[in-house]
View (cartoon, rainbow, N blue to C red):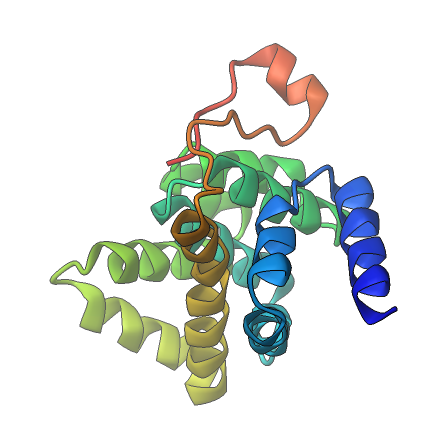
Length: 186
């Protein structure tokens, strides 16, 4: 009975977000204990404390792109849109257009710079971390650390289970896609 309910919820998530949940089904079929352990970690991806909405989404999307999972990045973009993050900001994020992102939302630009430095282990990471700490405090830094780390958990798990998909075009909206070709997720 419990497995039936879980499969139903996975199907509902798939239908709502157009995101394949085959990896979660494979995890459940392989080990219920592993599935439940993973399910207990998943809510960390939704933690948002002390951060503006666009900045939080910018960091998560940037962290996901570092894992080169197109479907995961598309899901994060769709969820950001559903929460009201402007399309122009999301497109600037996907285009890695820091100047445009800075004009649209300085906080999102700050978190994107931090997330890039973190994902790439750049030498400038301490300076980006300190700028972020100055802007959002310790709670903001802690929240971003959890958000970025937990966001990357999904593509890593999918890859380990053999369900990773790379090279999917990430689109912000149909109209924007018609104006310029969408970029491939990294």
